Length: 158
Image 1: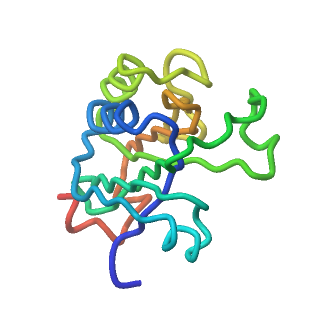
Image 2 (image 1 turned 180 degrees about the horizontal axis):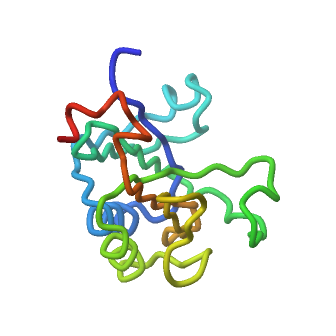
């Protein structure tokens, strides 16, 4: 790889989703491009034009919000359990102020999946799953000792 990982989410309401990820998780806009229908079709992304907005974390990862000219079909029925669907996926934000980030996400339209408060899934590892305003699953995680989880980042975390 030559750059940090990028993740794409197909969205129905681009302004809503941009505002959510900026306000709830502090992502900043870095690019806004419209891809014409011919190129979108050639790339197997869409039969019509689409707009892609790239938003970046302070660490350099990017979230691409992709909005086709014709909004995508609504999600099929959601399950209470992420792993019930073979096509399920989610994005994870690793944070150092769990309660503040989760509260901000909820204040900006996220819905709790795991209920109020954090879940300690193993000693010192806390998480919560949310759905963003369009239903994409977002995990918020806080590690008591992030350097033990990501020892490759130990120097930059000090």
